[in-house]
Length: 154
Image (cartoon, rainbow, N blue to C red; front, side, top):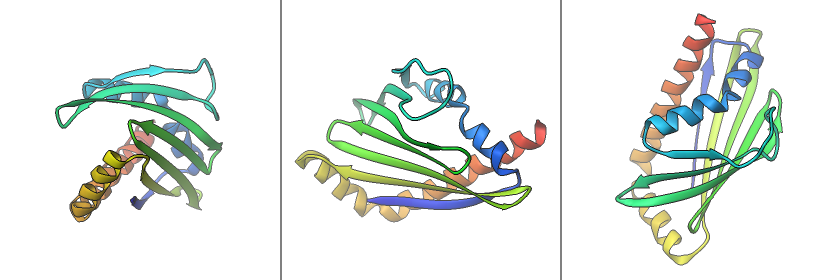
């Protein structure tokens, strides 16, 4: 199952990519929402091999995930692979410079079940795909707007 959307941001591609590489900000945001996040690597600069272990509650169950950066192509693309109990999720973030001051952000999530219970979960998600797609696009639009505002403040 795949979700994807794109948003245009009034900021140069390098500035947008640098904001996307502020992983500590994302870690803090996840912790504010009740997740536990730990880095699993010792890299000091962003790149392939960066990793995180996370744990959070979802639908009354404790979920654990391992996230690894599998592609890091400055300033064009970041691909993260997330593995949890029975699910493999790939998140692709692509940037395209539309002009010197405008960047297109394209984000795609692909969820693949690895076992029968995960397959049932994905099947139930497909029933709600329309509403989930709307929420996904709205959240990405809000995120893009926040990046734009952050760039303007800088």
